[in-house]
Image (cartoon, rainbow, N blue to C red):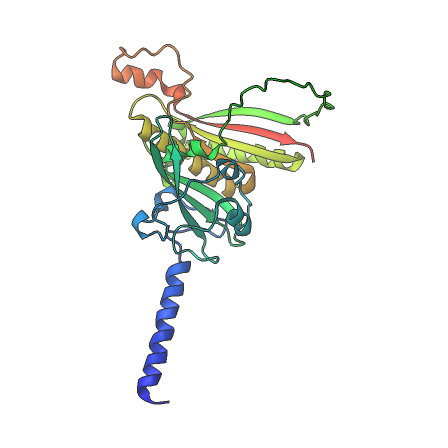
Length: 295
């Protein structure tokens, strides 16, 4: 083989290798083997670099079925292949989804799935954050038929009673520095609160099948979009902290609801700002709903 042919083959192999690397590298920084990433390290790809730039209208019923632990083959069946050059060996899959809004306009959302070392989905992110609402199936109102046939009453289905059902509120002011959400922004007292909570949750985890919903909340100051994003990021940080304390990632769902679920009722809009900030302190919280079913 002459020198020109050797150089040609070497160049071809280098290009193929670089192409494969580009397809399999993660986009976000510091993605862990457990399928988690610090929110500050989360990166969504440029939509103009997608192979399917127009995105797609997903089946919302299928979206609602995506939970921690789902595999790539299942994802492929539910929502199709990722819309960027991410191969089966990638630790991130990114999608561009379109949804109709009540005024018939179309909202564009980016959806990211983070996988663990075994390529099981563990973390899910939306951009913008309020797109999370579209992950629920649509409810369809069906007109009543002109002839109604009453079927025989089915045998009642008795849902299992949980052995533990508990709601826990943690003050966001105690957990995080003001207007912060990253793990390094957590206050020492907040970390100790979460360690004590994790001790209790590990005991619950041994009693049966445990499910946690971690929900971030804010007060009314700031825009609705900013507050929604802040609450989601804080909930994700608490989820990741609990995972470092031995709580199974598949048991924890993190969500943010922004300022939409206040608990205060005696803080009027006319109240001076500093006084209102103190008054609204109970609204700034992270709640944890714990449900445990016997195995």
